[in-house]
Length: 401
Image (cartoon, rainbow, N blue to C red; front, side, top):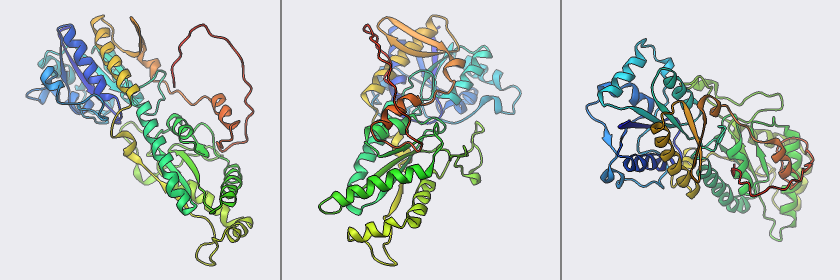
């Protein structure tokens, strides 16, 4: 093992540059050369046609900052199996042979990880550094903490405009079919209601919680000011289990329907119930807000921060984990491993798991949800009592997420 290629794939997020830099610095320590394969799997497929690739030596590493979100290596969403060229795997191997690359480090989520498993089964030496802001892999993945902090800050800051206009504010965030980012960011921002894919939404329960808390705040305020915040995961489901999808958008490279409109749908369900609630005009008149034909119900607004939650700076936690995951990936390649995912570095222990197992989707723990329900947060279902089990541990450190 003398030369290694590194690529990043799927959605961008915080911590990826730390993965790249950690791998490069560990490679240098072991007298290896690390090269960027640009633009993810598309770049890997087209490697044979490239005249040169960039070596990550000291000078090049000085040109980018590990704390910046996104990836210096670039991304694409390409499923190698879906490429019609029957010689696709030999084409990739020829590209690697052209540049004398002995192995690959691939940082990506479940979809990108499935491609990495496929490549490993084709005899290409690969190590997976887990990356997804959705936090739905079986191990912590770089990007999760950065995204949660970004969303939490946005939701918290939005309360100033919410109070100014006495609005209900609905923030829709990424997460597909696992609600970790919505859940954790909503808790951190002290959102009133958090809607996640794991819990099909009962809209009557959401509205009952909203009407009681929102109107109380404004009534009790000496200047009749208040807001109510909802964080919605894009993969939110109705009570009947149906997804909110944009049928006109088609499917992505991995066959997923494009999720769209969860925030807008939430606003519509709330507005519909406000208009049908005879208590709302009374509340509006009591607090001096009612204007017939103009302002008869409170405003409900959707906010969609979108790619802002992927951008900016990485959190300190993700920079730390990124460095460790990148460095560990190099060490695993040197040890002859392939088809495995870095789990964590704990002292001298470099822990890993089989990638086909690592990319199985992990969902929000509903027992954890019931703890926060007992603290008054609405999750769109009847409150489930939190029944604690007490246990003493002996210095055991478990993952944060």
